[in-house]
Each structure stands twice: as C-alpha cells, then as structure tokens.
Length: 266
Image (tube, rainbow, N blue to C red; front, side, top):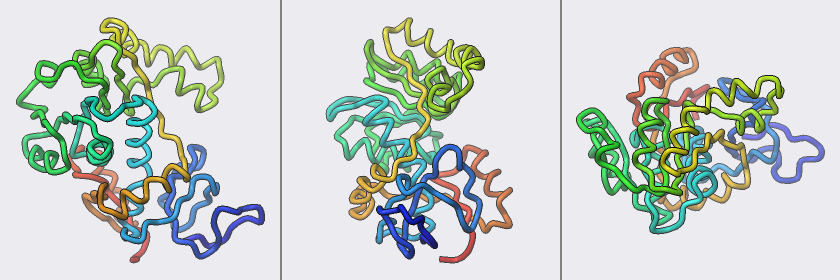
C-alpha cells in the first residue's frame, strides 16, 4: 500500500494498493517500506493476494519484454524457453501461449508434467536429452541458466532468429543501459564475446536483456492476471527472519515459480 506520495505525483495516491519492480538504482526490497518512482508502480490486481502480487513484477516484466521487445515475436512463431518450471520460465510459457506462440521448454524429469500444464507444446528432459539435438529452427530462445546452456542454444535457432540471455553473457548494451564508465566497456565486450561469436556462426542475433522497470507496462498486463490467463506461481513463502533460507531455496535451482519473503501477514 502507498503510505505517502510526493507533491508532484499524479498517477497514484496514498492508500492505493500497488505492486512494483523498483528502478535499478533502488534494487533491494527486503524491507517493510521502499521508495519507488511513480512510473514504476501499477495497481495491484484485485484477484491476487499480496504474496502473489509480490512474486510477479520482475518475472512478468522480464517475460513480456523478452517476447515482445527483445525477440519481437509474432503469433505463429516458435520459442525455446529454458527452465520452464523456474520463476521466469513458468511465466514466460503462459504469456507466450497467450500470444499465440509454439513453445518448447526444458525441465527436469520431475517437472515435465508441471511445465506441460503451463502450456508448453513440447518439454525436453534437460538431463536425459541434449536439447540442442532435439530442437531446431526456433525463432527465438530465452536462456536463464548460464553460459554453457546459452552457447548450446545457438544450435536451436534458425538463421535470423534471436537468442536472449538474462543470465550469463552481459555485453556493451548492458554497460550503456547502466551508464557504466566507458573505461569499463571492454570488460563487458569480453563477457559478451562468446555468445556474439556463436550468433555470428549461425547467422542469428544475440541480445542480453536487463529488465526495465515499467509501471504502465505492468498495468497493461493486469487483465491477464485478473482473468487467470497468466497465473502467479509461488514455490514457497518465508518470513523475514528466514531470509537466508529463502535465498538458499532460490539458489538451489529447484523452485517451481518464485520464492517470496513475507515481511508481515496480509
């Protein structure tokens, strides 16, 4: 809930129930109160609990921006979404199906049924199968796993397709977005060199995507949440005094959906 707003704020008012992904220079919301720019705030969907709403802004904006901006996919096209049971993957699959895309995903054997239930057309067992041998000619790939997985993904995309990473492989585009000192740009160039080279070998594009805090975009996605087209997936909820355990659960890489830290009861 908004406790107080500045004199020049016009998009919301004190008492509004909202949710947000704060700007990159204010990251860190293990707190009972945070300061957010009004352009990052959206109305909390009435159909969602506070815990469900808290689980969504980061992953929902990441998924939406990947599908509609970074990869700019159109209905009927295909996408490989890695880690389909994970926080971003589980939301991206639901949103991709709503947008009319053919979805292939990867998951552990124990999560295959779960990921198919989200709407994935095909799910590859990431341990029993080499996904790059099973998947070909995709229009786009979303990698949230890491460099080895990312580099193998270029074998799955068609010429002219796009591979997007939200994990390893940051490049100069991120340095620009974060206003990093130009003297450090060569470091980012080096970190992105391998995936850019892999993209060049197959005639594809590579993009590293750092989610943009965007209240109006978040608000525009509310109808999908209200109607149940996209469902929040909360793996577990921890009280604040168990924040370390919550972080450990998230870092295990076994969570289905998001791990949430609840500051106090709804």
